Amino acid sequence: MTNKPELWCCLYDIHFPQYDQKTFRAILSFIRQNHVDGLLLGGDALDLGCVSHWNANLPGTKRKGELKSDLDGFDKEILQPIEALLPRSCQKVFLTGNHERMLDQDLSESMPELDGMLDFKQYLRLADRGFTVVPLGGEYRIGDLLCIHGEVVGSGDGNAAKKAVEIYCQNVLMGHGHQLQASSKCSPSSNKKKICAWMSPIVGFVSPRYLKPRANAWVNGFTLVYVRDNGTFNLYPTVITDGVFSFGPVTYSHKDR
Image (cartoon, rainbow, N blue to C red; front, side, top):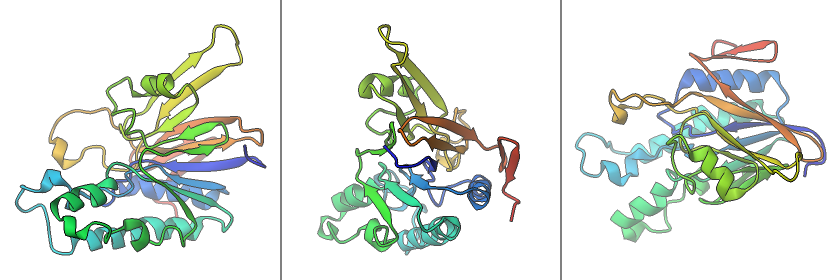
């Protein structure tokens, strides 16, 4: 439980550098104009396609120094702009996603001699910057809401949120599937026992190159959570269209400065 009401901004699946800049700038506009008590980066903040086994045999997909460039870019384009706007008291959480795992798993499998030498968390100084880092498959609780990345549940096949309700039997916010989903479950013996699961919109590209022209249900955005001092909360999955969204009477835009 929290000691006071808190507003949390939850950003899922940024997939840097494959991210939608208008969406991110609109989120920065919201953070600039509101007091944010907590920031959660919900996994796959880094794409790390440069070390992925999926690209191992694809010519022209890698370039010299790409890993360092991606990590430095994430620091400059994502972390620093957010940190410049957050109050010093803001709680910061970094959930490890399956894409972050690529640096440990894929690179260590292809070059085992480097195992233990490459750590994005140390390179980005996440702990020094005040982030609580949650390992892959782990969870973080905001009041009565359990926040996970979502890889343990599966991708957005239309049933991921429903599956999360069945697996966890508690309120869950997840990403990984890149879709906006929600599912609920109520106890027939108590009208007060209600649980919900949500899949958050994402900050990353919704039409990445590898999907080619295939249709999908991915949407840009982020999720706001207002948690009361007793742990109960309201959750607002917020879709951002072309860098613009409204929350209450205020409209936020990627053009705001």
